[in-house]
Length: 496
Image 1: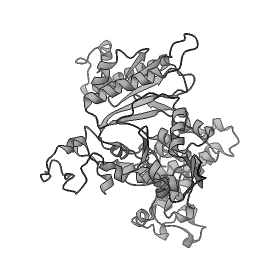
Image 2 (image 1 turned 90 degrees about the vertical axis):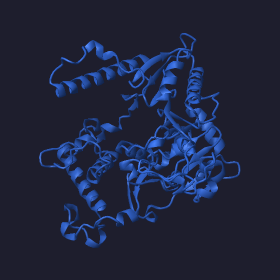
Image 3 (image 1 turned 90 degrees about the horizontal axis):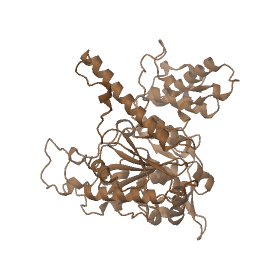
Image 4 (image 1 turned 45 degrees about the vertical axis):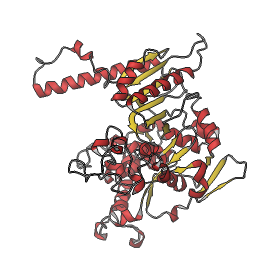
């Protein structure tokens, strides 16, 4: 429990008075938690210090090796329900600290070369990729990932200054245009939560700065949903939560209710520094399933669920010996949905002789209400209901076997709430057009909603006035050839 309590800046100055009804979370001193600035380091796994001690199934190839081999346990030795693990490996290799640093620099095209790393953390997918990519081929699988930066231990003014420094470093490391001899253009996308620096040439890395002030790296990593991405890099060391090291060893994220409900570790007084963790989107679970990390429901969780009576056997269970079937709700529902989805695909594509591109489906197709087939399942998200999630799992499994192609597996990325495909065809001009189109669509949707509520357009501004959006909270795109005129916008954004 101690490792899950976050020391935030607002609480450092609070008294030790008893908690009130308005703020039911007790102070750190009342809980016996170390209030020092570096207390968080005690609860983190450090690559350079702890790899051999924590990764118990690991061994260094030899004294001069730059990698550490982790022999994972057999699936049979991991009790519980294991899903989305078709790409899980029996053993992996991870980089040592020095090899990680070299791999990170090459994967990011030196986008952060020259940065003062004080109070800066790179976290998430790019940190995991740099840790586990020991070959160039493995690194190429993450060539379109962006670089997520977090700032910690700063005041607002200090964060604004660091934000400007990051932009200057990013621009200074852009490659030269072969035609002009000048650095390539970049776009700056800003909303109330992030600032994205997008280079004008693929595959150079996009850098995203999250506008959230946290107290330390542990506070940042506690906000990540999946175990394997709770990894960060501070420029001189790799830090990870214990659950991240567990995911490396087992190859699984452990299911908790936080994946559905999100986490509310921070009190209301602390939300300006650490927002509650958002619930996981099912697409993130499947994305990392393709990268080799399955989802595990612990046996203790399954035992707490009701048992489905034998009288309630599903169609797929009738010819299977009863004693070989697990009767908990998770397993019974998963078997039923696997059979249902297989039947649905067979009805749709027959003998599966058409080209794969002709057999493209969406997980959303399994969500829509279709007559009497699924009257109870009309929600779009599947993490809030096991039956719908099991249906998506079954469809994903069949897609990996080549029975269909998932539309969701066409790689897209989001910046400023605009979804786009990050490839050689994307230019800053196209990105700006996409952003402008998205802003206009948002404005029209808002206008239509108001018309439905008010029943009239009399009190609404004319369409031409709809372009006047909030310069801070609205998604926004700008070109950058220099950084001298960016200070005011950075300060306003960071204060948000």
